[in-house]
Structure formats: structure tokens, C-alpha cells
Amino acid sequence: MAEAVYDPFDEFNRAQAGMGRVRNPYRRYAELRERAPVHKLAVKELLGTTLVAPGMPEDIWVAVSHDAVARVLLDGETFSSRGYGRSMGLVMGRTILEMDEPEHSRYRGLIQKAFTKRALDRWEHELVRPVVNALVDRFAARGHADLVRELTFPFPVAVIAGMIGLDEADHQDFHRWAVELISIAIDPMRGMQASQKLRDLFARVLAERRRAPREDLMSVLAHAELDGVRLDDEAIFAFLRLLAPAGAETTYRSSSNLLFGLLTHPEQLAALRSDRSLMPQAIEEGLRWECPLTGIMRTATRDVEIGGVTIPEGAVVSVNLGAANRDETRYENPDAFDIHRPQRAHMAFAFGPHRCLGMHLARMETAVALNAVLDRLPGLRLDPAAEDVHITGLTFRSPLALPVLFEPPA
Ligand code: HEM
Image (cartoon, rainbow, N blue to C red):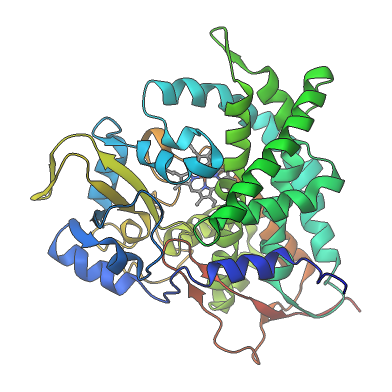
């Protein structure tokens, strides 16, 4: 019997189906915030699931106000990132995410070399625009599409694969293993196997680039040097494994959320269509309003008090970026999507030493995708026949689908 055609999107959604589909967690965060900036909660209650990642304790301290979140993230000495080693580290290897100072800055200094302004400009023209346009080509003449399945899901992972320097022929495997890797909580065995397969793929390309460097991320990482120190191979593989979830899953969800905000507020979509100088603020508002990754983790290294709540040494602290972005003491009418609101920095990319390394890339990718949609799909609107399109999720949030109609070219 022929094997069914592998569809990474279906596979991903199947894996995610058990991960707590929550339509609106923000009401609860507002109630919590009203009582205190930090709360001790049972993990199972917090996640609304029995699927708790390995290494997780029963109780967790959750920071829900903007100031509490900022304080935790700024103080890496009191709030260590080492806990990621017990969860993500199992499949990814030792990544930058789990490092504390001074190791973290040294390592970050090395890989930052791959994310220069020059590299970003080159990626925009040589990679992101062609990837996005090729995807839009597939449906622009049709007059209807699902923008999640056909655009926002596939484009960031294709960009990461291209940045790393993988050949076209390896893109599908990369996508498949990346999806399996981030579904580790659902299927640990497959996650571990995917981790190994990614390592083998990266090892092959790394050996090639050591012999003959090109203008790609693999070549930069292979030759990056800071104060006479180079990245060893395992550090390179771990970083590259991290890029699939860090760079692709977040960007796919954030661009979907921004599109959802615009499609459900057609007057704002029209304003952006006719005045593209609004693009940067539209992107920031999308990230504030529905941030794609709502919670990150830290571990307290000593007893510490925040807003009258004592967090004991060894406690796992969930830093709720989504709640911080809806803090009414910082943003007026925080639940409203409003690209015209006065700009104030948000927490979607976190804060402090671990602030997202790829944020400029993510913003650029989102702008390219949005501009392509606005330029090439006139009359874009949600399909009125589509049922109940909405954003869902607890830790990761985005719409499952964005069925749209538009005018095909005459
Ligand atoms: C809208 C898209 C994105 C969002 C919302 C996002 C969000 C975040 C957040 C919240 C963190 C902090 C994690 C923590 O401290 O626990 C982070 C770190 C990181 N992000 Fe992003 N990210 C996005 C896109 C990207 C892209 C495109 C890349 C690269 C291709 C990337 C690479 C990284 C890396 C390497 C780190 C670790 C930085 C460190 O530990 O010093 N991210 N991101």
C-alpha cells in the first residue's frame, strides 16, 4: 500500500492537539494580576493539561504583571535559565537558552556574528522575498486560500533552512524533523530520533562548509571566533536545532496573529494597505496583542520577594509574556487590537540578557509576508463562509486556519 503523503502541517496540528487549546486566557490573567503580580499555581491547573514536560515540579510561580516579568528577566543571577537543560536540552543539546552569565554572553557574542545588518539585508532580498513570493504564486490566481496552511506555516521554516545553507533537496526532511523535534512532549521517542537525524544532516553540511565556506549561517558558525575561542561542533548542532522552534514556530504564529488582527479589523487592514509606513507599528501591535510564545521559564537561585510574594530558592518561575503585554497599568484598553495606539515596548521578544536574538529577522520576515499579501491579494477578506476563525493556545497561540477570499488577477 502506498504511504500517505507526509504533510508537516497536519502532523504538527495532530501533535499540538493535546497541548491545551484555550481561546482566551487573558481574563484569568487579569484576575490574577488584580490580586498580586506573582502567584503560586499547580502546573497541571496552569497548563490545563496532564502533559507536563519532564523535570517540571508540581507547583510553579507565575509572574503576570509587566513589572514582575521585567524584574525576573532583567535579573539573570537570581532567575537562572538553567531549567531549560532539563526540558528542551534533552533533545536539542546544550543551547544558549539554558546558559547563565558569563557563559551566555560569550556564546551569544559568537553566534551574534551570524545576525548582522548586512546578513539581514541579504537574506531579505535573496531568501525571504523569493520564498514568500513562491508560496503566494501557488494560490494568487485562485481567489481563495488558507493563509496559515499555505503561507505563514511554511515560509519561516523555509527561510531558516535557506539561512543555514541546506540544499533544496534537504528542506523537506528538515521541516519534518523540526516538527517532530518540537513535538517531543507528545512523542518523546520520535523527538529523540529527529534530534539525531538533524544532527547527521547538520554534520554533513558543516563538513562541507569547513572545506569550502559559502555565505550562509553554517559557514559563519563554522568559522566564528571570539577571543581565540571557537564553537565546537556540538554547540553548533544544538544552536541549529534550536532555530527551528525559536525562529520558525514563533514567526509563523506571530504573522498569523497579525493577519488575524487585521482581517477581523478591516478598517485597520485598509489603513495599512494604503499607508505602508504603518507597517512597523502594526507588527509591534500584533506581537503585543497576541504574542505567539506567551510563557518562558526561569529557576530562582535564592529566596526572593516580588510584590509581597516570596519565591523560594529552587522554584520554577513561569514568566508570562502574554499577561505582561495585556497589563492595564501599562497599556490603555489592553485587550483591543489597535495599530494606531501609542507605541510602548512590549515583552513578546522577552527582555534582558536573553532577549530574542532573531527579533530583527522576525520583524523583517513579517513585513515581507504582509507586504506580499497586501500587494498581491487585492480585496483580501476573511471568507464569510468560514466557521468561527479564532486564535487559540496556552503557551503557543495562533489561529488554526485563516480562510480568505480575494480578487484573482483579471
Ligand atoms: C515573532 C517571532 C519571535 C518571537 C516572538 C521570539 C521570542 C523569543 C523569546 C521570548 C525569547 C526568550 C526566551 C527565553 O529567554 O527564555 C527568544 C530567544 C531567542 N530567539 Fe526568538 N523569537 C522570535 C523569532 C526568532 C527568530 C526568527 C530567530 C532566529 C532565527 C530567533 C532566535 C532566538 C534565539 C537564538 C534566542 C535565544 C537568545 C538567548 O538565549 O540569548 N527568534 N525569542
